[in-house]
Amino acid sequence: MTLSSFSFPTAIVFGAGARREVAAHLKSLGLKRPLLVTDRAVAALPVLAEFRNHLAGLDVSVYAGVFGNPTASQVMDGAAAFKAHGADCVIGFGGGAALDVGKVVGVVATHPGHIIEYAWDHPQVRPISGELPYFVALPTTSGTGSEVGRSSVVSEDDTHLKRVVFSPKILARKVFADPELTLRLPAAVTAATGMDALTHNIESYLSPAWHPLCDGIALEGTRIAARSLERAVHEPLDLAARSDMMMASMMGAIAFQKDLGAVHSCAHALGAVCDLHHGLANALMIDTVLAWNREAVPEKFDELAHVCRVDGGGAAFVDWLRGLKQRIGVTGTLSSHGVKAEHTPRLVEIAVADMCHQTNPRPCTAADFERLFAEAM
Image (cartoon, rainbow, N blue to C red; front, side, top):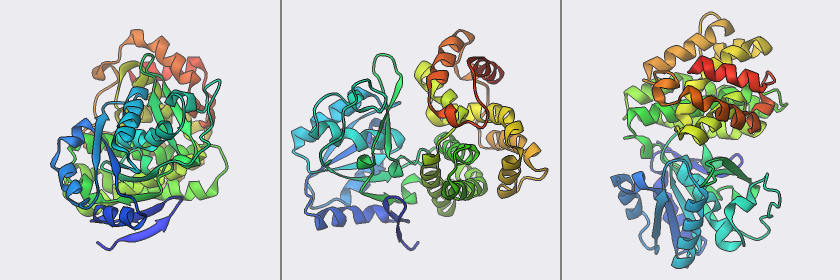
């Protein structure tokens, strides 16, 4: 595969083998001591050892303290590891959690205070005033698109509430998007992360915010994911399908600068209360929420059906989504994944407080969220 280079909004090297370009890129900038931020699971896999072989000539330290939904303490521990190594740059290597931590390790390594104090909604939010360590990102899943995002989502350790650090300064300076890094992802992870990417594209397109550039990206990202997600799950070594899903993931994250919707508000609540994987939570809620949203923007559902080649127009789109989920093994209801009726009041409380539903095509009240969770249960 030929490597392609472009910027939107970040400089991106995309294609099989892109990971081999990282060392030369850092050395060309005079950087020698990277902190490699990854998660526990990836650290135990051959893919990390293989990548480290391509970093010869650099003094690399690995911080592998990321696991589950990323937390503030993981960021603080990563910043301590950065200082202990005397690092001069950060390599984020992994799924969305590792990349979200990697994006902000440099913030608290070079700025005072706790990472939660940099969340946009903190009552005394701290500015990111100084320069940050150079940061490059290599995604090993195709879901969040965190590698091209200007935000980092980390949870409070005690409440599990998700907090968002948002700043163009935390953008990766360069992304090395190598679909070969996803070739051996398990089917369940491919499905859940792929549904996350698809949800990002769909929800950003449905958002009533005006952003024609993002609308175009979101529709094309939806089309690409729709044609390749099933193949990526069932034919895990299909490099073309893996490439499509990595591209769709980045496109979804670029598009959702237009904002998201109620699916994500529900998913954030499910992550906080029940510690559900974010992509799985989106997948479990998307058809229920979209069926409710359709009457607000039927013409947009017609367009989604068109790009996904769904016969029957917008009226058939949600049924197509349900069928896709079944075919890729995302089955069951909220209750079959450990969510209980007694969780509902807290789920509703968090969903209502979440900012994503502010750009849902239908306004959402607490009663609406209660009904949506009950239907998905």
